[in-house]
Image 1 (tube, rainbow, N blue to C red):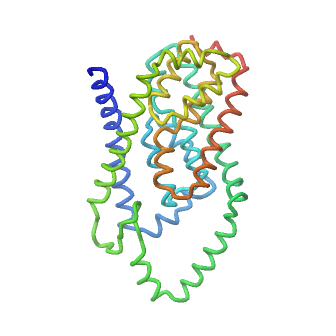
Image 2: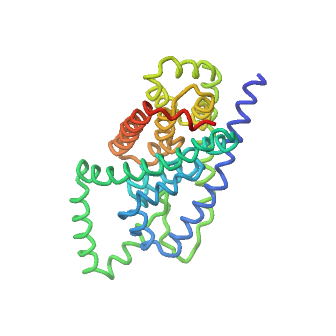
Image 3: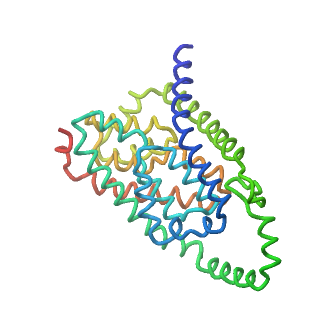
Length: 312
């Protein structure tokens, strides 16, 4: 009973650490929508050609809450798919703090950060063009331009229409722009917090029942399959997966290429939030498949390079 109480408290603690950043970001979004809705929604900084690089830098901050918020923003079309992919790949969750705490892993940490940022940028730009081809986004852009031209011709009518249909990040009406909806970001943050806590609790129980050592032994079974095994662990939507991967790498059980694979695909709760908030299932599957393919590709490319010297 005490063990499950510890799991419950750990899940609550991990989830609570995300709550402050969720509150800050959602209140910021609400404020931007309250002040300048249209300018925020059409920002080329979040959706333009520089978005993969910005997403990679944004995601490199060791905070899994960023992947959650990025998934939310993407589902509301606030950021590009390239930026979302870059954030997912660049994020490293608990890996950075753990490696910083182990001085012998500092060289590996520096290379890991640079490697993941570069991979995030490269894959982000590849995704930008591939997504346009596969989902024919160019036609959609042309359609939107024509729609905007039509709306300009009927400006008076459309001004009223926009007030009726402008929505914030979870579709609440903000047609009254003279009022700041402080309840929405608060309630929304608490809802996401509850969702994250439930997932963390479930995953904590699963890891406890299987056992961290059993997972470690499984990943250490065959060197050639280490990146693939690391990928499977990395797909676990919980910070425990990044902790396991990092500890095994520091302990010399998996290669640098393997930890790159596991951490590049380890977007944490972000992927679950993406499937929950974004109703376009094909897009979600495309994003997950992109993470898997490129994480494995870059991971295996690094797996067979002798980089043992990175651990002092």
